[in-house]
Length: 263
Ligand code: SF4
Image (cartoon, rainbow, N blue to C red; front, side, top):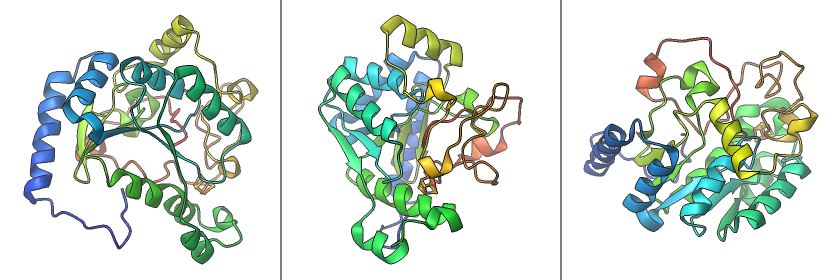
C-alpha cells in the first residue's frame, strides 16, 4: 500500500515489523485450512479492538459482513466513500448496516484540502486513475488504519490469477491482514447467500458483477470476464490498496476468474 509523506515507514528489519511478520506467519500456519468463521473468531480474539474490517459494500460483501455481525456487531467497518460511488451502493450500505445491526460503520473520505489541491474539478479519473485512486482510496484508508494493528479483507483466491496464492493471514506494511474467504469458491459464496437469505447489491441484476466507482465501472456482457467492466479499456486492474505479497507474485498463473470486489 502506498503511504503519504507524513506516514512514518518502518524498515523491514524493524522489531515491530518483524513481530508482525512472525504473528502473521504463526496465524497463517494454524488457520490455513480453517473455515472463514473460525478465522474471523481467531482474528477478533487475537486483536480485540485493534482490528477493523474493510468493505466495499459491493457485489459479494454481504457474506463477510454477515459472518462478522454474527460474532461481533461492534467491529469497526471501514467503507471508502470516494464521492464517486453509485447511489445504489450507498443505499446498499444503509440496508446491510441496518439488516445486520452493524454499529460502527465508518465512511472514509478524502480530505477537503487534498481534493481542493489535487482534484478541484472532480475529473481526475478522466486523466489519471492511479492518482485518483490514491487520493480517494489509498490515502484515506492508510490514515484510518493508523489506529489498528490488523485488518480484514474480503479477497478470495479464485478472483484473479494474481490472487491465486493469497494467504489466509499475511503481513503487509507493518500490519496483519486477514483474508477469511481466501479459500472459498464462488459456489461457497452463493450457497452462503442463499442459506442466510442475504440481499444482493441492486446493480448485480443489471449486469454489474464487480462494483466500484461509477466512472470506472461498466456492466459486462454474458460470457465476458466478470471484472471486465472495471477500468474498462485500460491496463489498470487494482486500485492500489492491495499490493501482492512475494508469494503471490511468484505463484504460477492459472485460468482463474477475475471477479474482484469494489476495492
Ligand atoms: S475507481 Fe475511478 S473514480 Fe474511483 S477512485 Fe479510482 S479512479 Fe477515481
